[in-house]
Amino acid sequence: MKIWAFRFAATLLLALTVSPAPARADLFVSSSFNDSVKQYNGTTGAFVTDFVPSGSGGLDRPEGLVFGPNGNLFVSSYLTSSVLEYNGTTGAFVTAFVPQQSGGLTGPVGLAFGPNGNLFVSNFVSGSFGSVLEYNGATGAFVTAFVPRLESAAILPEGLVFGPNGNLFVSSLDRRVLEYNGTTGAFVTAFVPTGSGGLAGPVGLAFGPNGNLFVSSFAESGGGPLRKQRPRI
Image (cartoon, rainbow, N blue to C red; front, side):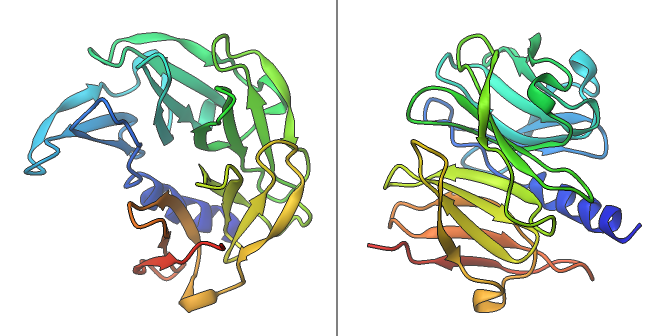
């Protein structure tokens, strides 16, 4: 039960993760408790609309968001073990881009399109070893388990981001951010060591304009500050 309480808290924080969308000026937020994606004015923060209405296309507990190379919005649907695609202009449902449990997907959370154009999905598996799965960026077909088995069952992958060095960074609920080779998926290092700077439950990841890594941090007891880490040179 404890892990599910922890996972629920993570959902709350992931709902505040901003999807990088250079062509869109507005802010899009996954709203896990009513199965929708909200749109807010990118300048004022004022609510605009339910960009993806509740449950559209079977959406059930949305987590990660990312706009793809085709301009459409991709949303991980945690409780259906799938990734859904929506029209990037209208929010209309397009397709189950990654069908239910494709490639062994059981708990999709973080999403990121890699330098090769493919979609990478963190696979959060409660009580087991998590992974990062790779799917064809045009068709959604399963390609490979890019990171097939995280080195400990305690590592529960959440957010994903490709860094300026081309490597993949993965936040884990064991209070670390892990770095993997962006081409091979081989483990590089614990980029942010356990609990560095008071990190407790890292979820969302983003590299800022200054080149630093920003990490959302929550505690099981309820909430925490946003922290930043300086990237390795």
